[in-house]
Length: 290
Image (tube, rainbow, N blue to C red; front, side, top):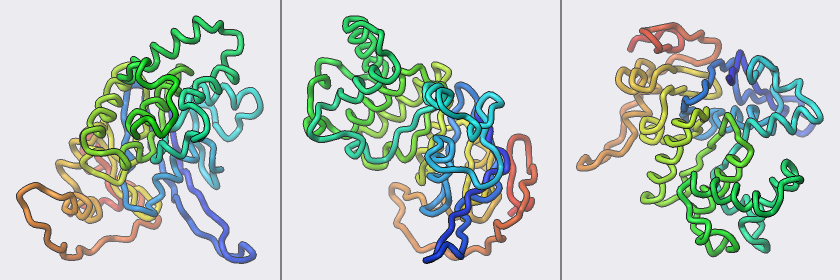
């Protein structure tokens, strides 16, 4: 379905754009229907930039991103509207996606105006109700309310319901639960599992390894814009081979264990290091074996 091949993103910096900043470097992976792929890395690792390139909010400097074999950079005009029928994104701060002076369900009206102008009012209400129920929301509790009258979890799920109205095939979920409280996080994660069961492909962008481990089938570990390790989540987390992956895993807080500073472990440079297969469905940069 979605394939990234050798994707890079370079930004021009400096007063006159005389310098370059490489945010993403030669990244390749795919997302299949009914599969959750987690992009994991610390701030500045390039994971959000990759999500924005998939959503065409940021251009690709090199390489290709294809959906069903079609280079998304070549999609123009009406084809772009069709692309967004298939691919949608939900972002970290749900409150920023709503205008506080309008009721929250205005986001549904915008979808109707853009994609379903001929659908009658009764049928549209039914579609909204079904979409809200699919994300575990009671329409009577959220429709007609202003954003400040709803919780962050409710607003986030309304955005996912909005995407489902388009019958999307791929959801880019960029840190969608980092601003939610612990009790709400598990509800949204379980919702993603439900969407996966329905055949939706999900690109799950996060800095939290425990969340990625909970929800994803495959994991891509990013460091300074490059992939240092990737593969089946159970293999990457169960047998971490790259020092950076081990560092991330060791940094996850654990109950009943006092946090202690980690000793620095030498890390090979990620620049230009090709991924080498270490075992079935498990790849590591430069063939690092620990």
